[in-house]
Length: 154
Image (cartoon, rainbow, N blue to C red; front, side):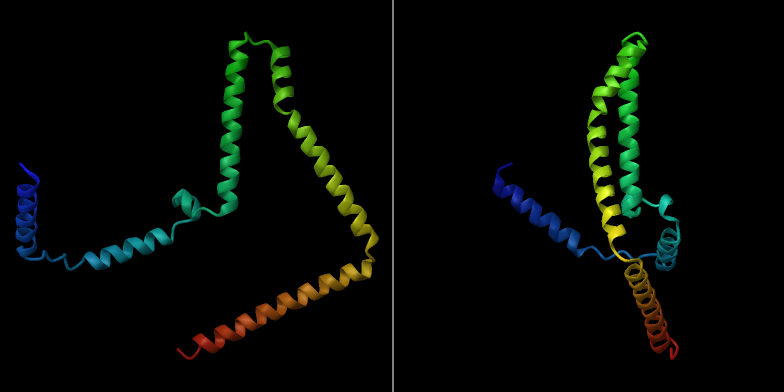
């Protein structure tokens, strides 16, 4: 077929399909769909799809999965090397050397935070804690008042 005939055939099929009567949905379809949507929304997060998990849970899952892959690869290397413990120890030492550097950085930051917090007077820390508690209580009270004002009259 040449392109002109294909275009003509396409228009004819399109027009024929457009002239067909619309199919009616079953009467119970809307109720069934809404019930299924409510059922899926009521599921706990771990039974829903991965995209609906909290960000922290997704991140932890990815880290654990990467860890299992790493362990599987290291186990494969260990099996292929004839179960040589010294070679496995050297492989792990080179693989996790960066963790020692990272741990040193974390310790340095922790020491800095510790020294900084010890230099702040305790009264100031208690005052900041009291302010945060008062702000939280005010937020809770305003939320309760807003809920009462908006939804009690309905």
